[in-house]
Amino acid sequence: METKCIWWDGYHNAFTDIIRFRDNFFVTFRHATMHAIGGRGKIYVIKSQNANDWKLVTTFPGFPDSRDPKLFVFNNKLWVVFFAVSDDPEFFRHWVHVYISYSEDGVNFSRPVKIENYNLRFWRIRNYKNVIYAATCRLMPDEMGTFLFRSENGIKFDYVSTIVKEDHANEADLLFEDDTCYAFVRREDCKTPVIAISKYPFEKWQRYTMNFVVRGPHIFKFKDKIYCTGRVFLTPDGKIYSYIKNETEYEPKTAIFELDRENMIFKPIKILPSGGDTSYCGSMVYKGKIYISYYSQHELGKRKSKVKEHAAGIYLYCGNSIE
Image 1 (cartoon, one colour):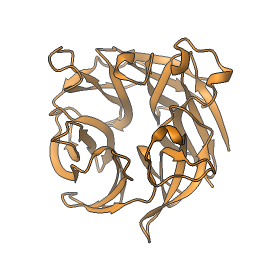
Image 2 (cartoon, helix red, strand yellow; image 1 turned 30 degrees about the horizontal axis):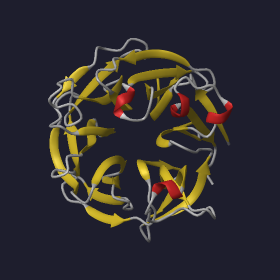
Image 3 (cartoon, one colour; image 1 turned 45 degrees about the vertical axis):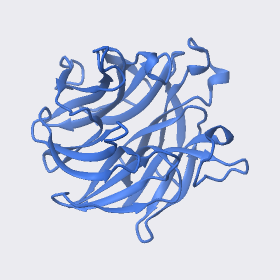
């Protein structure tokens, strides 16, 4: 098992995903001057044949600010989806646009196309039986919630169901297992997340409240177990906190949990080398190994920064096991 920094250029690099396509590893992330919208983020895609040596493949325009890119393979193409704040000054910060691009060879990407998104942030797209499903969220105070959409062509998406309505629900990730879908849903206002479960056609959901505060949700399966990752907060004695009164009092880390499906709770498994602004993982399995991408500032004091305290790097954890 090892963790290594695969991208550090002195800027704020964050919000990751990883996938394998045409015999290469691909990682995407946001490149910016800070975490906040004022960072004017661009989307980077890098690739590697061996998961050690990485090179920049392409970048997507910064628009006013691009965020949260995700990768998926569909119809033998590698797709990148991300969203950006509106370029209309009247709707800046109040409306987002979703963009999507694809590549047939992993080298040349199409110009990003704006898709209809109903002011929803497309958080994660998963391929299930040759149809893609998108976990989406809306952050307007009177419309907050997490929703499931589907598409047969990667451009036009149709509403399927509401995963969690209101309750400060927003970012969500999906995992398909046979005809069951698991949704890992973040909730704001210091609340713990929800695991929602639905059977095909995914129109009704059973919801379970988890036992730790976890942000930047990611869910995946490895060796017949379901794991969840995200940003957690440690108490002074090193315990993962289940409720946060003031975030400045706790130490942020990126953690891995096993989902205890019998009791529907999180079991802490591992704290990854991390700190500061951190989390937003992606994962993939290749030749029996798990690869987890994430970002972190825990080496900020040892590396050069071009944006003062905002610099963050992209890290990759890989191993034959997680425990």
